[in-house]
Length: 156
Image: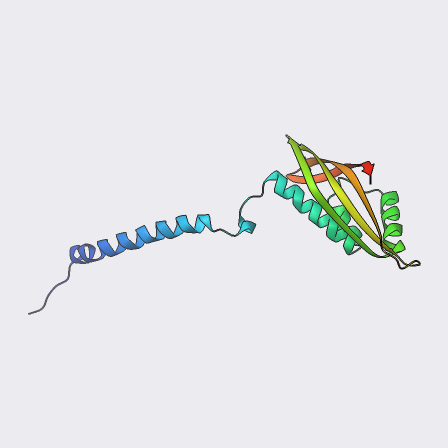
């Protein structure tokens, strides 16, 4: 005797399996949302500004004028020349920003922080360190924060 398997039979047999699979897929998707890599999540304005701080540290440590200029609203040829001379004057430069206080208002931001800069002059060979309190003013242009003003507030 031959048994004919109908569509209804397959539907009856597979429905619980499909429902379990769909339920598990929803659970996995919910769990995946909680563990998405940080690169895939939108960054807050403060996080974007902290990335600028880190990029500026790297730019100075590597004497990378192009990386330095990425975060500026504009850079004039005179500014480029000054920075290039500064970079060429030292064998090594270290830069770090500490305790940034970031104040946001719509598409503008103010950052006040302690900047520690280390210089190793080519001729003297002795590391010099300077600490200053600086203020940056930033503006958000096309979704990107850009530095448009830097002011030295206090030298320690």
